[in-house]
Length: 158
Image (tube, rainbow, N blue to C red; front, side, top):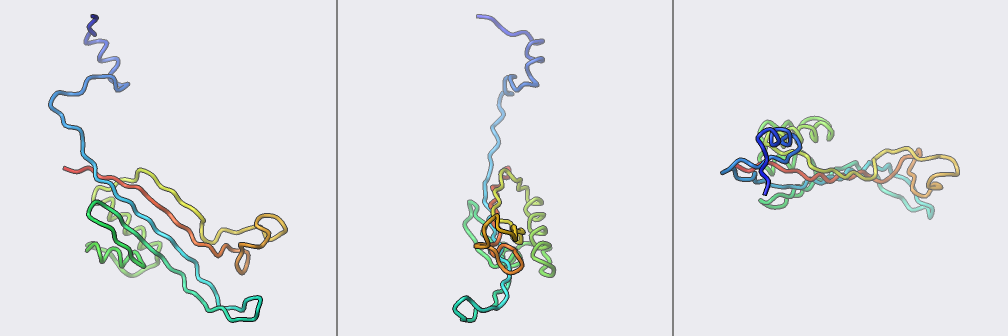
């Protein structure tokens, strides 16, 4: 059986091939998922049959899932209130509130591991004959669909 010299171990250490220190416990992690969906506003109008279509305001739906449980809210401010988040300003746009909430998560040690985003709100589609052929466009050629994002987060547990 061959033994490795100290010089060999020093050379292999940058590649993660060094032996772990004795007595060290592996880190423990806590995981969570943050999902949000935005829906754009829709102006009132009339459908093809002449029936009135009511206006719909823009909105946000947020879901926070962690080992402690699951919470849903209709705004970032509502979710922050449910989580008893300190220093959260309820004034400002939904985008500002989202940034405040993400900063809050970062201050609590949460790190982003993975993110999936679909259907960007307000994406401009081809107004000509190509693209979606007009089927999925709202007034002005904008998508009536909202955007959604799911983020997987982790933080170290002491």
